[in-house]
Length: 134
Image (tube, rainbow, N blue to C red; front, side, top):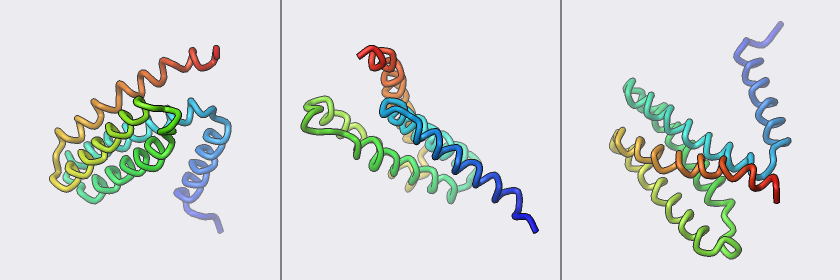
C-alpha cells in the first residue's frame, strides 16, 4: 500500500533541495556549488578508502559536473576579465586532477582538489556581507 521508506526520503530530499535552491540568492547558489563539490570529493575519498571504486567514480563524476556545469558554466568571461579567466583555468585543472584521481585511485589528488576548492569557498562565503551591502 505504501511506498518503501527510501521513496519518501528521496522525495523529501528532492523537495527540500528544490525549495532551498529556489529561495537562494545567486551568491548562496555559488556557495552551495562549492559545498557540493567539496562534499562530493570528500565522499570519493571515503569510498576510495573503503575500496568502493564504483562510488568513488560516481562522486568524482558529481564533482566534475558541479565544476563544469555550475562553477565554470556560470563564469562571465567578458565581464569577469582576468579573474574569470583564472578561475576557468583553475576549475579546469581541478577537473583534470579529479579525472586522474578517479582513474588512478589517487587520494593525494583528491586531497589536492579539496585544498584548492576550500579557500575559494571560504573567500566566497566571506564576501557575502559585502554583497548584501552593495
